[in-house]
Each structure stands twice: as structure tokens, then as C-alpha cells.
Image (cartoon, rainbow, N blue to C red; front, side, top):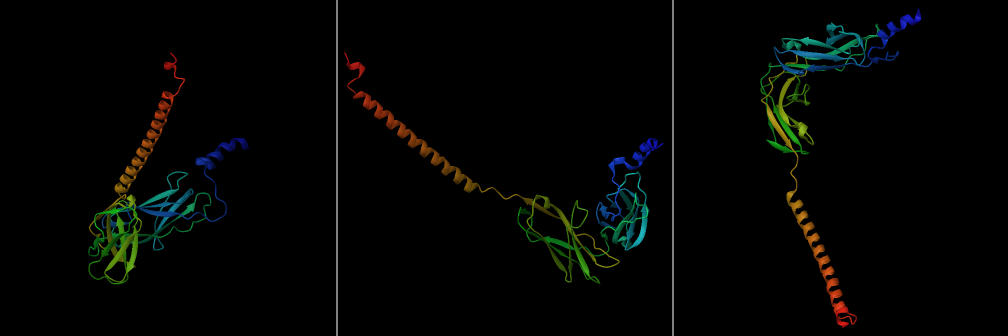
Length: 272
């Protein structure tokens, strides 16, 4: 009877070589937003919760209030997607996700780190400028200055955005109209199009329209052509000089040998 149960047990416990966790705390899930955590109103976003272990179902919360729950599609599912469409101002705020373990059905994992979702278009558009426009050299420092438009009640945060990144590159708080974002030791990966927004740091998290895009191009430093040319020239001169000395030395040996042979009394052509 027991051998007949083993295949069934393996189907339930061995799919994907999944290890059953012990009685310790469950791994904390992570929450991400696609295509970005900063989106215009009336757009759509997908909030993805990753659990790292098979889960019975996932829960999405906003400011501690449950918004939705999703069951995984298959036995070994370790993530779930929550879709929010037609984004409005009240969709902005901090989101977290949780999951119930597939193995420990009564155990709820701790919440993920909070993810701030910003819905833009409710405050005036800021401006973004670079202290050094155009192309910059790798290894240098780039400073981008974001200036808000008009006054906003309450504490304000600024966020630097980059096309292709789902999260802000940097965030800064400021009491004035302007804030600087500094990128140290830039590389080619820092090349791209940037913009900035400012938003209320507390509910209802009203966010501005993003600034116009500002493109940054990072290039590798130029080769020191002059130094390299001088180095090559000096090296060639040294090699030519050494070769000339060797030729002179060999020539001297040949002349001395010829002269010695000419003066020798035992020269075969004089024996007659």
C-alpha cells in the first residue's frame, strides 16, 4: 500500500524540486510596478508580488487596506500580478503585498517593502536643466536641477526619472523651489533621457506632470594621442639607434678581420 502512495507524494512534493520551508519565518515578498511606479492618469499599471516560495494566494494592500487577492495559476507559482486600470489621483500612495504559504496554509508572510505609486498630471509641470549640457565624460559628475512651478501645500518631494526604469533614479525633499540631483562617476549606463516630477509627500500624493525630457550622453575619455605618439616616436628612435650601433660594431669586426687576413704571412695566394 505504501509503495503505491509514493508516486502521488512525489507529484505533490517534488514538482520543480521545491523545498518545504521549516517552521522559521517566511521570506519577505517583493513588490514591483510595470511599466513604472510613476504614471500619468488614465493609464494602467501591473503590480507584481514575488514570494520566493510557492504560495496559496497573494494579497495586495494600499496603506494597510486590502485591495485584492489572487490565487496562483499552478502548483509552483511564486508570483502574482495585480492590474490597476484607468489610474486616478486616489490610486496614488504606498502599496504592499503579502502571501500565504503553500505549505504552511495558516501562515501569512510579512509584508513587502512599501512601493510608492504616483499618478501624475495634477500639479504644474516642472523644468529640468543640466549644469553641463550635452555630452559628458565617463567618471565625471552630472548635476540635474529640477524646479517646480507654483506653490504646493504641505511637504514636497522631488523625483528624478529615467526612461526605461520602473523606479525613480533618486528622490529628494526640499522646502524651496529648486532641488539638485547629482550622479557621481557616470558611466555609459547613465546615458539616457531624464525627467523630473514633484509631489505631495502625504495623501493624496498629488504629483505634477513630468518635465520635458533631457538627454544625457556619456562617452569614454579620449585616448591621450599626443602622449602615445611621443611614446611611439621615442621608442622607434631608441630601437633605430640600437640597431645602428649593432651594425657599426659588426662592421668594425668585419673590417678588422679582413685587415688581419690581408696582412697574414701565411696567405695561400702568396705561397707560389
